[in-house]
Image (tube, rainbow, N blue to C red):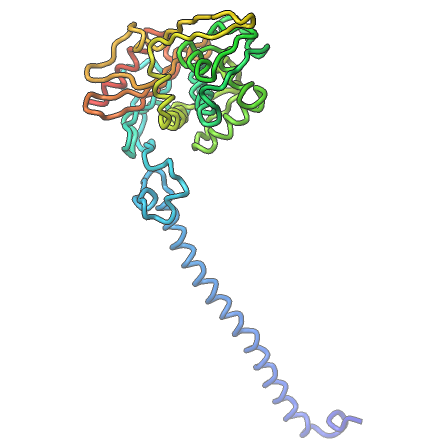
Amino acid sequence: MNSEIITDIKHKAPHSRHRRKKKRHSLSARLVPGLLLVLVCSMAAMWFSESGLLLKQRYDLKSRSSTLLAAESPVAFLSPFAASLAVVDRADDTEAALGAESVFLSEEGTSSALFVKQPFVRMNPASTTKIMTCLIALEQGTPEEDWVAGPEIHVSEANASMAGIKEGDVLTEEQVLYGLMLRSGADAANMTAKNIAGSDEAFVALMNRRAAELGATGTHFTNTHGLTDPEHYTTAYDLYLILHEAMKHERFRKMAGTSVYEAEYRNAAGETVRKKWENTNYYLNGKAELPAGLHVVAGKTGTTIAAGACLALAAQKDSGDLFYAIALKSVNHDALYRDMNTVLEKTE
C-alpha cells in the first residue's frame, strides 16, 4: 500500500511542491512553442507584406514599373507583350465633341493612353471582330494552302457584307483573308473558321482563348464575322489589345492597309474567277481624309444597326510615330470619320 496516502500530512508537503514544479514545467513547455510560433508567424507576415508590395509594384499595369518591362528582369518573360502596351490611367475626355460612344487612343511604345472615352464599356464590335479572325488565321494557317468553299459560306442575315465566294470555289488562304479584311466578307470569315479549326464553334473557342491570353477580359465572341449577338461584345481597350497583337504580323499590315485587291481563282467547274475587292475603310478608298501628316498603316471597319459605325485604326505620322485609334458606335459613316479625325488630332 502506498504510504504517502495513509500517513500524516508531513508527507504531503513535498508532494505538493513537486506537483507545483511539474505544473510550472508543464506551463513552460506549452508557452515556449507558442511564443516561437507567434515569432515565426510575425516574421512570415512581414516577409509576405514586403513581397506582396514588390509583386504589386511589378505587376501593376497602371504604374508600368521598370522592373516588369526591363529585359533583365526575372519576371519579364511572364508578359512579353506588355512592354509596348498602353494602359488607361486618365479620366474620360467627355468634353470632346465626339458622337462615338467608346474611344481609345495611344501611341506605340508609350505606357499611357492619350485619349479615352468609356474605354471599358462593353460594345458590339460588328466587323472589327474580323481582326481577331484574321489574327488566328495568320498564327495557324498557311498562305498558299488551297481552301475549297463549302456550305459554311452561306450567311442568313440579310445585310451581311459578303466577298461573293460560291460553293466549290478554290481560293488560297491568303485570298480568303483579303476577302475578309477588305470586303469584310462574312462568307470569307466562315470559310476561314472551317479550314483552320474544322468548325465555326471550334474557331470561336480559339478566338476567346486568344482574347484571354491578350488580357482582353471585356471581350466575348460568339461568331467569326461580328453579326449581332447579345453575347458577342468587346471594349475599345480590348480591341486595341487585339489590333496591337495583329500588327506584329507583316501580312496583317499588308492586308489591312491595302486599298484594292484583285483575286483570281477557280470555281467548281474549273473556270477562272476574277474578283476586285475594295477596302471598306474610307481613309483607304478615298472617301475621307486623315489629319495632315498621318497615313493609314492598317485598319478594320464594322457597321451594323446595333453597333453603329466602328473603326479600329493604326495610323503613322510622317515622323514615324505609330498610333492606335479605336472608335465604336458613331451614328453613321460620315460621323465616324469626323470622330476619328477629332481623336487623331490629339496626337499633335
